[in-house]
Image 1 (spheres, helix red, strand yellow):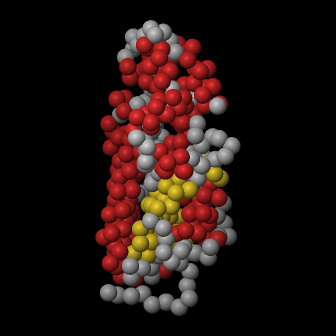
Image 2 (spheres, helix red, strand yellow):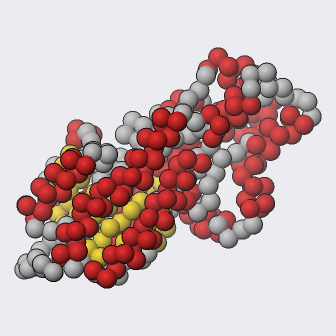
Image 3 (tube, helix red, strand yellow):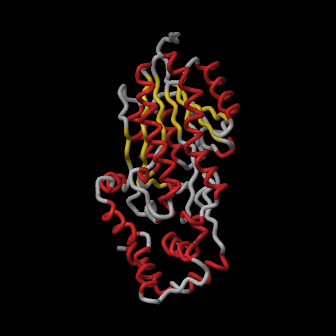
Length: 334
């Protein structure tokens, strides 16, 4: 094993998905504040602002392009001689009923959220193995523990990240390389972290500020023995609790939280007919829960959150469930 010998030095950190205002951005700043040399990666470098005077270097990475990843990692190794922490944060969201998902978008999300974690880790891990040390921290989600309506694909992708990380930890342990899973709760961020914004969960006054979340996570990552799982943020405790509950309890809670109980009641009582199809009825329910469709579309361009929504048909369906809107809103207010 080739060991890189150095005198007292800063830890070298690579963070992906560092668009200003998001988790990756604040994590990069927090690592720098803790004395690390940070490489902040994104597809659009002009989307990383406000780091002047900090020991943070922007670096271009398209997490779905092997050549881009390889060149970025080699640049860091040539300049620094090592990478101590890889923080895999890049990802995208998708809000949609399962039966209305666009298959092209499904493939893109799975590549971005799952395949990219493997691709970037494959490039960095060999250098950590040579060093005999290092940490790979992969951003998952509390929804990986218990998924929610409208976010099935996102939750599934993050559950895959958790599983990959658990196995990667075991495979790299003999070489002294550690792997941690970061599972954010509701975080105040311009990205609508983990799609929770679309469900009105991260808009509560008690949502965890991104900088506070980043500070906590970084403090854990810099420990000599980082935790396997780092859960933090509003609602993270709720999701941890729910993961141990029987599914009939989870379904009972979620059907009320996400408007499905009201929808079922109105269909049963004949107050709602679905002339435009079940899919659009579900999307109308989503619109009631998430608010104006623009609030979903505007999660963040970097995450490329998409909702495939037929406005004409949806408006027709929505007009038939207007009587339920105040009921659902009152549930959220409560």
